[in-house]
Image (cartoon, rainbow, N blue to C red; front, side, top):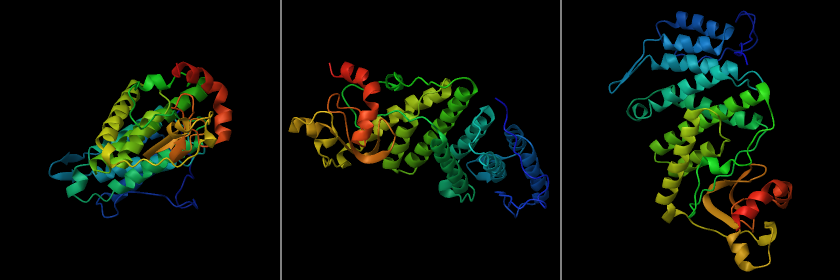
Length: 317
């Protein structure tokens, strides 16, 4: 796997594409920043991270100094990396994402009392980036139940059938794609929790835990924390959750009894993902046998039946 080169026209004047720059136009060293933008355009993401590391920024209780320039380098590099379709996910892009999320998380408090014009821009770029990676992925995420049950396992317990069939460089690239999504979802959940947007925080902690695990230990740790935090927030907000059983037993495997029908509906105010296609809805029928795997339609139930049968039979004993 090689570092993605940002292939662009050799001269801004010759290019018909508008250069998307996030640097403040009022900066005194605007000329040097433009030179560095050109360096980012002509070299790799690794060079962009190196340029950002050379900025003498300060961040403390009194506010920020030159943090906007670092954010500008990061966003410019990410913007050019996203121009390739599909996005090439590797260690350099993962490192860039890690640096960007750390910058965001270190400014959560500062953004409350000091206006940071770049803060909303950088999180918007990251949120959209994660969405793009999700759309380009060929695999479905895992189902992580939102409602706490008496028997709750770790992330590992949800991955028994998650082994990938792809290999080589494609498998490595998919691992980096997963790691990047885990990192961004965790960051987004923390930002929402900081803003007391509990429902949204639960959604993104769950998304973080739902991404198939990677071999990278930091991301494994993030997923374990995300799962535990999601459960804590759900428990804390349980009195405000309204349950609505609105689905009939049509979507379940066994519709012979009304009790089976009632227990076969997942009804939480947070979204639920279909175990087969990954689509999200507020409520979704579940397998009538194991009462845990949600499905959005009969088609998905039938399509997932073979792979689900082994875990379904074992969990029903």
